[in-house]
Length: 292
Length: 325
Image (cartoon, rainbow over all chains, first blue to last red):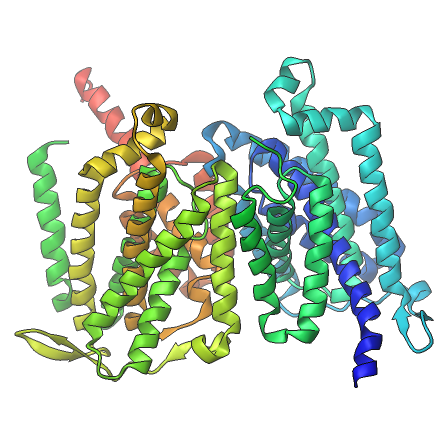
């Protein structure tokens, strides 16, 4: 038994890594949007859910995971831009209370629509046939290729995000807007377009997460509340507006989740919130949060 | 509005509410009891959001803590009078308010909202996972046989719908008076000044953090009281009494009525409960309709029903002044 548990540790570590990267994909877009526009966007996790449902639908129609992987995130990105232009912007003038309430209302409506169309039962999505095998990691330990694929894909996206933010002109604008939107505006950045772009990129990332999560956790309307809470935990721990902080926090939460479920099953959820509350007490703005 | 009309209106509502159980059926008495309990919760929320401008999105946590505490005392201490458990529930809300307030009040704006949600989620997770204490998913039950002793009157069973109605009614009236008085105290004035200009209040030498902490304790007390009452009424308590969706029900009710007016949450809970009741009787998709309704309200009438009414009456006075009416 003892040796079996010892074998499990690397596997659990990998599970935690995969889950952490998934949270990161959703939370990274959310934290950028949140720190730029000062709103708590509840509908962000709904877009992730929509991504998963679109993936299910496309696989039903075309039987190809790869088409879904390309098309669904694009639709999600478009929806995100529409949401920013059509709804959030409308109530921006009347204060952040109304913005928050609006995004929550939107999240509820999206969840109800999904329940209406697809029902409440989890819908299975097959793992793409190219990735169904398992690989031998060590002497006795096998690991499904699909999870490794999630890991690689999210690492690629992560690298792309950091490149975009640190090395491109758009990235400079985005970072300037996160730091001080008014100042960036005064210096000639078109803040409104940057907002829409970030919303688009953020929801595109959420869409990717939704698609790759579909074969791994199946698709159901409760995905929304599961993910939004993990995202909030991650952002609270990492600090608003800090992509690096969110990455570190996602990896922590992923590991807490994966080891907690095995070793302390009765308190695994509480553990995450406990980490969050501890961070709140010690550093109210998160580990890497920006100062006021 | 004219003072005498106001007094007349309040008296009329009170008399109607007292006489209501004599004419109405059990079902409507039940609904109105629920509405009154939600009004208390909504009022405590008004003090936070409408009066002080603090957007808490984890307000159900005090409601749930009050409920769970009362439930635990009802279950584990058989000889304790039910009225005392209500007080204990309210008091636990007060403690929770102070405790959570002392941690989240260091933050401002969106960070603050975020932190309130985080703490309420933690309490929810505890309620959901600590089976030994809270019964986990199943929640707690088993006090429907208890009796509520009213001194000098009689002992009433908790299954007596009319009694619960009058109990909720008296507590609601009491709470409304207390909350109204609270907004008129120096502390209340300070808090409404904090809403309009926190920096200025600070420069005047008033300690904002202490004032806000007092407010957190007070709203915790009121919300805890409503939670305790709610579990006497529902005869059970479960983790969904304090989850994210419950917190948002409070917000939805406040928005329907108008979150920046004192009467807003009371009117809002009335409309909300009857709307849910009506919609769920005609369609399965009532949550979708409620969601769309809520969004339209935020987009076009963010001040809710009270705001609509004010707009309308302003138009009327304008017209009457111009002698059009």
